[in-house]
Image (cartoon, rainbow, N blue to C red; front, top):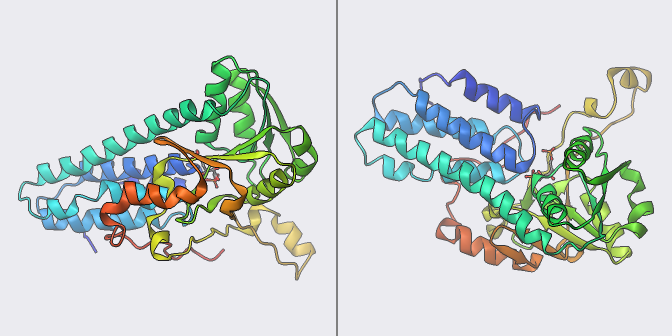
Length: 331
Ligand code: RUB
């Protein structure tokens, strides 16, 4: 463990990811890259070896904040991927520069990718389409907004997304763009599905077999869509594909505090009732029509090809410096 103090701004970013002030897989990834950049900039020591240890501890701090979105460890692994090279350096400012450059590169790539997904995905949306989306995904919103800006008159059903109501953010964002949006309770999905043409959602993690891990409720929506023969599109940057699943690792589903679901009073008045709050669920590939990435549209079964293309260079020891699915606190 390093003796160098962690900058307050870095601690704040880690806390904000944990308490969901910073949320959504893409934003979390960019925030982590920014935190690593700040950590490198603020490093006061002169020893390259010590700097490496310090960066590793920051990397571990960041990946331990939330366990499900693989965009987080992927971003951290990307930014710190040059640590081996750094160990051969003697000049500390050169070492710091390598990390800073990688972090900036990741943030730029990520922002461009979300936009590109919108451009590519919008080709799948037709004029007059009724779209249903869940939670708050920048990638899914990018698809909808791009289509709308091309003059396609779309109408959107946004689920409120209990218990944290991220659907409110989605509704607000779409409204600002001038898009016709209707907010519905999560439980109304099957009822409205008969009016829906396409489901567009985001992803936190995509497994090697094409299964999509996204906000809890996504798999029920996919099931209802499947029953109604409505197509399901997942909008996700390539850094949301999980290299660890190639070698059989399972994705940890975050379980958050029951106090996000009910208040203290409920527990006092109903002693003995257990309340659970799983934050994500798994949609099997059979219920997904296509995954829209910044490098093209693929069937979920082709997820392994994306993983080989993008992460093939180091699938086995990709997470060299960090522990995936690190223990979450018990709530
Ligand atoms: C957010 C969520 C989003 C994905 C994709 O969950 O499930 O659908 O993260 O988002 P939470 P994006 O609110 O718990 O973080 O496309 O913005 O990366």
